[in-house]
Length: 283
Image 1 (cartoon, helix red, strand yellow):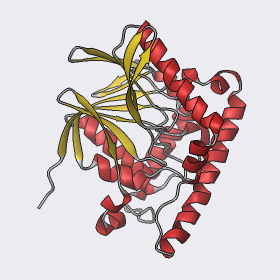
Image 2 (cartoon, one colour; image 1 turned 90 degrees about the vertical axis):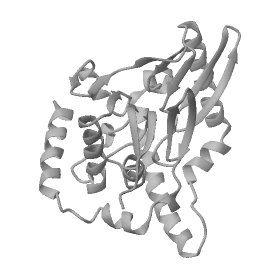
Image 3 (cartoon, helix red, strand yellow; image 1 turned 120 degrees about the vertical axis):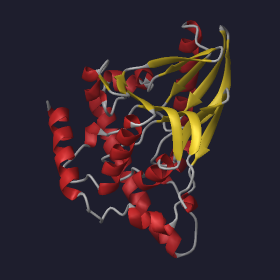
Image 4 (cartoon, helix red, strand yellow; image 1 turned 30 degrees about the vertical axis):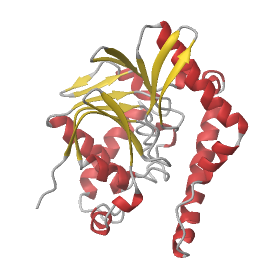
């Protein structure tokens, strides 16, 4: 019996980083196949163009792309908001392909609230002044995730739970905590000045829903997190925002087999689509 999809008004995803070893594409595909949003907002860093390579593009990553395109071809309106890792797509801002829109930011009126969606890399001082350093940091982060995968394999062998090295580092380093706090406060200040009641960002891989009080007023701050460590998505229905967190145990064994990276039943189609994407990124 086919499982009924969960209906949601809006789903917001960010920082998927397709094309990197840290991307949890299998889990994301499982989530996407089980929800039916009216609107899907991809809030930046969906495809990691900084580290885009012919050497690493698994079948599960291509299946995520195909699933999103399939959703756009049916009943879902899809907004692709550009981020820093996929900034090359900013030259396509304003482009529409059926129900798929490429934009740099987005404003929606939800009830009595005006909500501003954008990736958030404009707040990153390192991004603005030392892009090469930011790219080096991204490569280091991806390497740490790769090491983390091995650590978790050993941990599961001994019957222990998942461990996130980079998450633990970020939570225990004062400068990282301060950066996240400053990012959220800066986003809130800007949203209040512009007259928005809510702001939804990505970029910092830190899922959050909270009201921020500032001297100029208050704003509902939202961050969709990521699909590397947190596996989170913002969901909006009946006037309420909530945070979905995917649990690894939700991924059943039969599903894991269906999306196994080693299965290349549609390999030729995947290679053709990959070459088209690669050509666009390099032009």
